[in-house]
Image 1 (cartoon, rainbow over the protein chains, first blue to last red):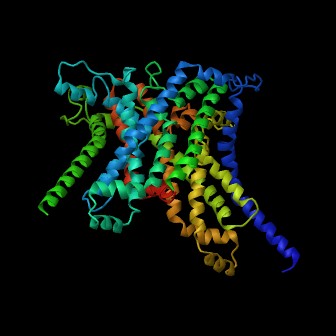
Image 2: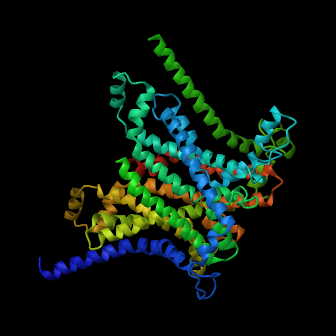
Image 3: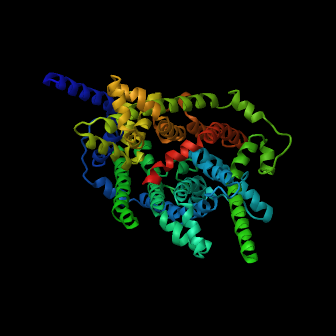
Length: 299
Length: 281
């Protein structure tokens, strides 16, 4: 093969690579990477999204953000959602996964499908449906309460600042436990049947099999679901929006609803971007901690 | 032995009752929505839970005939945007993943890392600049204004899954292909793509579900009711008909039917898409 032919072949390969890569690179850069970088720049300005960026404010947006009681409330709510997911949702998902992961339990496949169903429903439709369930006049909850205590005043769970977040947490649990259960099932199905048999022969009880063999073996899977759960909790928006837009009086605000209200409804792009960057940094620090410590500890 | 047997039975009873309880808690809200659509407001108030006769199909008829709300146009918009998102996503991601996994070139690793970086960016972070971007590109109130960013945010996970799959295709097949006179593109079109239907179906299905349920992006891009997708449509409809919950429940039911049917049909791929990374990771 002479030199010019090799050159031509190489040039051909290069143009093939460019043609194949370019569309994805352009779309990804334009709609993912560039906006994230822009958010970082905007967060340093006071800007309404029109005209030139001129009003540089340094870190003032962040200072204002962390001095705002509503944002701190939103931050707190996001963390409550996270802690609730980790302490209530994941253990519940694990218990159910342990029950239905083997197909020798009759109806297991049916139960799996039912449990996973809410996950594929839209968050908005879920939220609207649950608004009805919680409705003080027509809702199911009050109907049930009325059967047992006819004299009780109807509860307006979504209209009371003290109960609204808890009512939404129930919906989040309802919507997402099936996702985590499904992830655990995938992990559990990777454990060989022989291990169970060996443990039984050694006289291990069901409880010992679970705590000494099963759980240690699927720690990597658990770590994945913990990670999904943390990152997902920090980004909750749709369900909150469908169930009262962060109200009443900001009591169910999360970081993302706060960002939407300031950034888009009031056109404070700079301030809203500071919220976005804060969300990003919190997610990033969780990712780093996760990579550094948890994954290493688990493997 | 006798003790062991009763113990087994107790465990089984516990398993069944817990599963049944949770299944009921999952299904009751859905059951209430379907039935609620068949009730008058009076029936709904006196008996939200049971079946009340006569069943009144009026709500469903009003919604399906288009007398109330925009059900059909919202359905069409949701379908069309999903098709666009999945189509764009699969074409550009398969091409990129093929180049990264099967052609050796300078910067191979860096480009892959660049794509995977996106796994760290929550879509919410990009939302405000994205909105300005869509506005400045003249994509407000267009289907592409939703489909392109949706496809873009699926790129990292799709490229990752396809990359792993394409890499596992044996080199022998590529050699055979080149003996037949095909270059990279021929190998890609005639060999890799036909072999990759499982992974293409998996990534397509998870993209479809994400697009179907997306609310944030359509909320930013559309202010024209005729362009609303189902989640936007349900939200808007609830705002318009706050006092007519039977109608709202009817709308909710109609909006859920395509998703539930699709879910039953494609469950295998949805689960594979969600756990593919999890099992290996």
